[in-house]
Length: 164
Image (cartoon, rainbow, N blue to C red; front, side, top):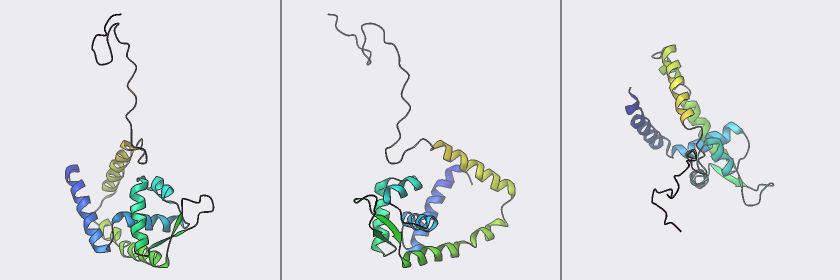
């Protein structure tokens, strides 16, 4: 599969997954993270860990809470930033999904060679390196341009300054 086709295919797979699971993949990411960490987390911490904006994570947490998959608890370290943890329903939901998916690699592994897996890891690593300087909570600014000395009598826009 070419790189151009990989993105639409991945997007279609995510849409299909959402329709099968009944909730967005962002909600699933929150559930997986809380399960993996095994302790309550704040929305900002989840955002940093998932490399997603706080606003997006907040929407996903709100949707998960509306479905009784997560619940807010007081944060002794910060009054305005609640901690969120999985509910029993949330824990059962994510564990069921993960158990159902655990057989998928076994099915696919017969078709993949070690070279295929190495190539995939190499490409994904390169993609991650492209985005390593992005701060999703602040946006990414390009590096500052090098300072350039302007000729006397000109502005940064190239116009002549009036003489005084």
